[in-house]
Image (tube, rainbow, N blue to C red; front, side, top):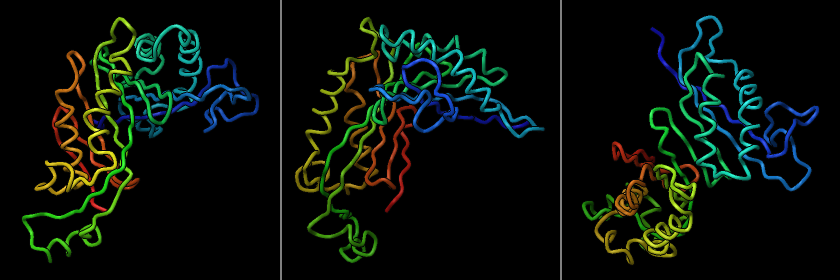
Length: 270
């Protein structure tokens, strides 16, 4: 039996109706292309199923785009002035799913910007995922007290500089929960207050080895910093909201992600 795969499609659009004549059906600039002050939004669709042996495709992406632009985008525009992104996703699901058959709709995500997304996933549609990205700058020195000075220098190279070095970290935090009476899973002001108080204000413009007690004996690698943030935030949200995921970028090429379910991480050294 063929293995199930997930096909992802990203559709960029504005809240204006219609389509731009002569424009690509799914251009990077969005369709319709706005000549007014209208933001470009992103809808991401995840489909689960098996490839057709003859075509080598799970589904023709033109069919995906037709369903999105014909059924989903009009609904988004209808609800945009009255509902939150979280509530819109729940309204979209029953509209969207039949148009992707025989593939199974696995996820829907609305991105208001590269730094803020709401997502709904098959099997737990009562819960909405909220993902937002934050940033802070910090200095650190990669140095393990379990190794000799020479072993540290050999292993970490210039990152073992006794005077340290800095990074502009980017932190992505994902929480999930049901939609509350205000249409959100957590009020934005509350979410920001928690992240700023427990993470950003604690780490921003700090020398992690020197100014944070937990890293005086713990090597502040991207893995250890991400694990520390995950542990700090794991009990910070009032149920039924819960922490789902933490991902920390040390550089555009290096990140560590920790999931709540398995509490596992994946990272890569520079």
